[in-house]
Length: 220
Image (cartoon, rainbow, N blue to C red):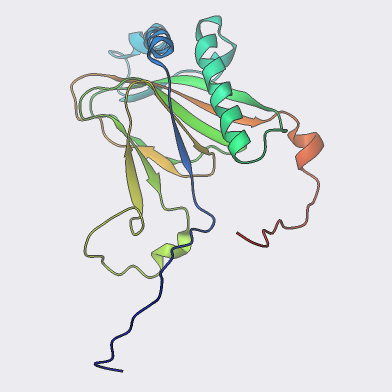
């Protein structure tokens, strides 16, 4: 059909089964309280290891949601999860924090691609980010996409195998726990402070483990 001019009456992109990441911006006053708590707790638990350990990326134990000093952060994490559950029409299912820990990313630190098994939501709150160290990476979750990979003229969020999202102090990022993610290198000369967490349904065994028929949406 060479030379024939083809015109479409309309063109529509219909996103199906999108992979979502939520960014929730904490109000400044609450963020200041949380930032101080995260940095203070991280230094108290791991600061003495800076000279004794060769590790550049350091994580605390994962039970800080039970620590009285971290209750403001835990409450904000819970509120964020409840808001996202409402968006997903899952608000009637109670969910709870199963783990919360603080991180110190020393100069040059990275955190390799990983997932958080046996949870529904995972996320990170950013307390202190040095210049150039403000990002989180997410990997293409559809493994079949790597079978045919023509080179695009330019990369964008629709054709990339890895996407880096910018973050700021006071940002809370939340995603499905199966979504593979990583932390890019800290190029600065300062430490990067954050807190990460997992959440799971409180009644998972009682209400969510029985076999179900595949869910189908008949119309969009």
